[in-house]
Image (cartoon, rainbow, N blue to C red; front, side, top):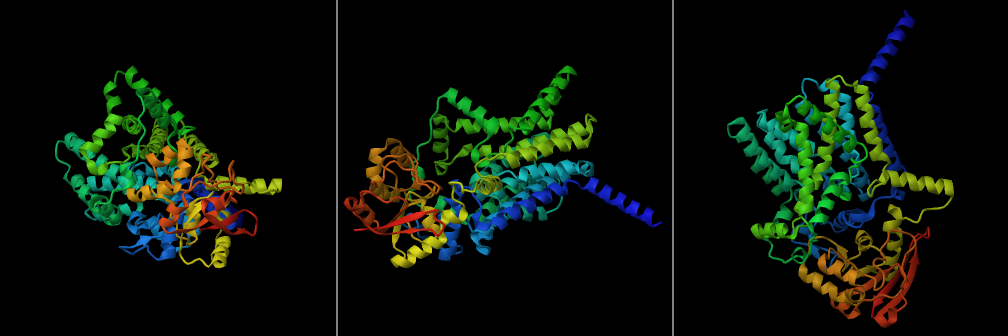
Length: 588
């Protein structure tokens, strides 16, 4: 009897594991991610571009200055910009940084993004396939997992992975599932972002209301009512952004930004590239597995329709709609660089001057992975293969995301660099999180020089490092600040811009990075232990620097022409592990 009971227990466990096997790779990856990032702590390697050099420093600066919730105040970078120019506090992602230390908040954000992607896919799938959900459950979870682990632009990971959640809420509203779904939709912007996704979601929703009203032969009033509800949710959650856009008369750098103007052949080439590969802020790795599967299915499926003389089904097939939607977003991305069209949009809607309507491309990742899920479900229903084979496909897609070392794959880079150091006995040249911000070093520097909030600038490294460490900067990185300040700061760096035409164009035509530029190299700002520079001279107008209130220049280079430029070397300071040396200069 005992042996029989043990056998039944083993059978139950086997059945449970077979039924819920997908929970093991998901839980395993989450534990691995948490283990690596919390195990190595701030010795992990985190993506710098548009991340550590931008948002992480801003969140830390808001924490340092206690200005997360304040109004009518400036924050100490770029000579002092309005708090309203920085991320809203009414955001789930921002709230993490108010509650936890910056590094901890960043890791929790990664884990939260993954879970949000899985939950969003699951909720939408249960609504779209209510009768067959239990059969599809493993592939639904694994597809949501594949989507959730994509290393999106970190600050907007929630906004990317929550898109299926928004669709789920709108479907509930359309199907008359209850009035409280409007409240849920109103709260949705807490995990979204208006400039990247919200404005497009509202635009797509308008199209959906018109199309469904025509198809159903009656007005889609409930879905139409969702428009003002969702729009109001964005206004409330991002009231600072809307206040700046609609009620501020300040001329910003958006007015002087010069966008690319490409000929038609290059635009077509760009459309093909983003359709096939996406862009780095939304690098979903779909080209390795998802795209081949979808294209093969597209050809075979529509070929069968034609063979059976069922051409009308081609127009009605939801999968084909997804493929057209993806192509549409890619075409819009390319047409943004077609100057006549861009100018027309700006003339018709002046408040959208400088608005990047090519961000439609940010919706392609969810469309690609949604299309993959639809393919696998259909082939399973058709009996072409068992569900285990569909799961193999989606598992390969998961591995492709995990093992591709794209810009923001922090897990890969941390594991790779630490493994290299272990097996080779030498550190990589790249700076980890702790070395990049060098808090201990800058605490020492501030104490030694008696720093009391004087305006400063960075040379040879990102101003974000100073901002993170509580040092006020005249330089900085922000895509939305005063055009007047851009022109004033330009006087400081004019000697460098006059020497390097590419840098002049970069600053004058864009200007989001108001840095102290090299007068010889295209860039000397690196997140590396070695500073790669061919010239140790600095080319700045020290009088203009002082006129803006500047006092200190923190440099990764020992400047060869400091005295003749009007700078006096105070001292040099080296991090305890030797990863970074900073030379502190005072404007004479």
